[in-house]
Length: 175
Image (cartoon, rainbow, N blue to C red; front, side, top):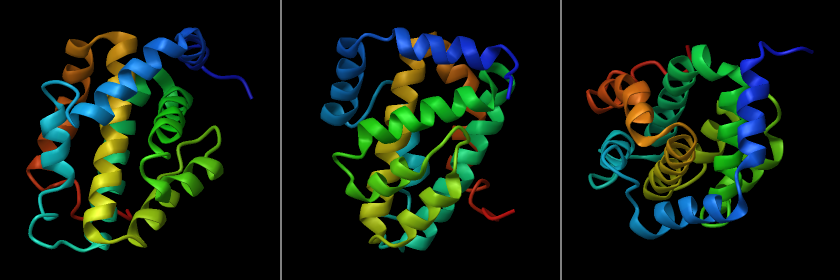
């Protein structure tokens, strides 16, 4: 199956990443909890009900809607396979600190499978699901920012964070 050219560019860029750069990006995510200006938006979008005892199903629904919005925002630029490659790399980096993501990573293929993420998160506690989801999004954001720059990443994902922080993204996640 031949991609649209953009897929190959993003995959080549990911392969060219040095291990040191990726480890540094992951250390920023894991250590600080907030990548840069939009890191707080990620936590706000994913964890609004975590402090209030939101259940895992709500956290999983919010994650599913958010990831679909991320894919919709980025696929026209990097292609669906480019988004899937970044998603899988984010799963790989996050799976060690959130074991519920291990099965999602192992089942991930060339297409981003957000349904598997939804199912895995729905089986956790609300706080664990929210934490894993936020960590995964922060890792994704950090990887993308390292590829294209923080400013462009924030600009491309602004609509995602605006929608999710307003509560619109989680209204009907399975559509």
